[in-house]
Image (cartoon, rainbow, N blue to C red; front, side, top):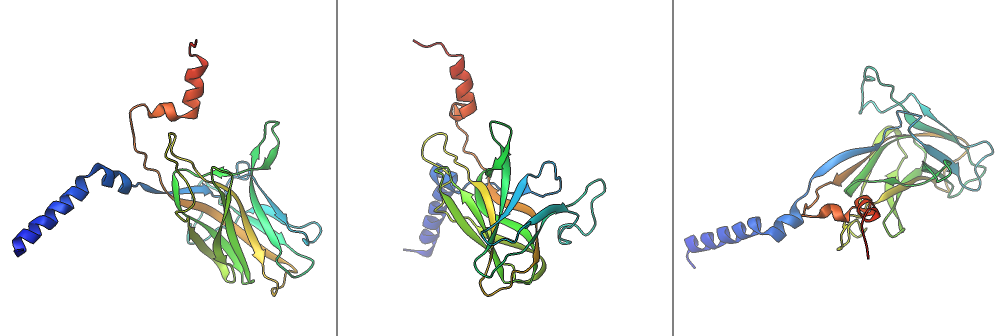
Length: 244
């Protein structure tokens, strides 16, 4: 085949790929960074922190403190009070001890109980700022899918000094869509867990969390009648429907 003919064939194949509806739909994405929790408002930021079996009595102690990473804000913005979630903890013995950071939601009786934070879009990555004091501990996030299955993703070690941004990718095998309408089935952040290693001391330490953020694909493939896949819309139109 002549060189000019080969170039023409390659150009034609490229054109077909670019204009093909199936190809365009599968590759279209709109990635956004979304802050899920910044801990700046203690009234709106509802979390609880609990310890495992050998937590020392009266611990953990936690509070929304006036501290934050300089990498986020060198100076506190005018008219805004920056905070992070700080924890002081002790355990009575070495081992695989842990702290659980769990978001709270209101139940039907108005009581605050552990519950998940819905994550918009199809989540690609999750990251947060964690302050460490060089203890050999590690941290992980727990995400729940629409089937109620919890997936544990490692964020990494916190054996460093000061603030660092820790991140992890959300594997593609964790389902976030289905074939049927409504197709989007979002994930929920159900807890963050800090683990101690058996060889590391646990007689008193501090840790701070700030700005939990996700990188997520919020693109939606629009179609005529998509509102009929919205559960709230379905409830509304069927409540006033006339049946036989």
